Length: 240
Image 1 (spheres, helix red, strand yellow):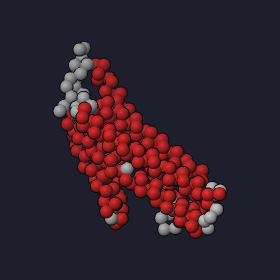
Image 2: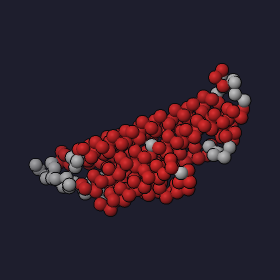
Image 3: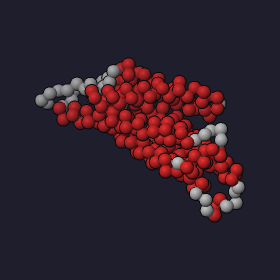
Image 4: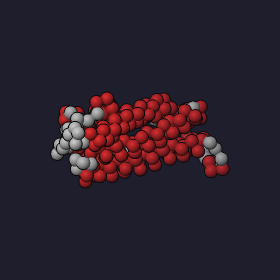
């Protein structure tokens, strides 16, 4: 249902929540692209565990910065989800809570995935725990840890997409943003969730990576810019 008229104070508060959410959408998008596109994209070689291990040894600090950036991204998502809940719970508190629960599951999976990246670096650091492995075995273990990290990041997109879809439904119902943008968000979010679920059923699903990711990128950047610059279209009852 559309949000009813509000006082000046309520209007200002909701605009702060909207702009906080917009800022977090954009900031987390930048940090996520850095961690995934630049760091992992330049260091991880899917066809060669040995080459990946060499890259991590030579660019150890860059990979650590990437892991730290991931943690910043996920921490930013916490703020984003809080702001969206505060903004949308007047529309439907139960649905807003459901969206939050989905996103919290996402964050649990994604935070846990970072541990596999840390484990890969620990394997390459040497020590008594890895003395029994030859170079090929060690490279294989590193590759396995990084694949586990990638799997965790991918699986986290399932609750991410579902939670994002519920928030988009609330945005559509509330008319706080253009309904076309909210409708796009519903489709893009569900597409991301279905894509990630499809990876479990068939590795060939990864061939459609950009088909699933680009609509979500457009939605989150578009919504982030709208919320940050314009805010929400909330009727006010001036002087109430």
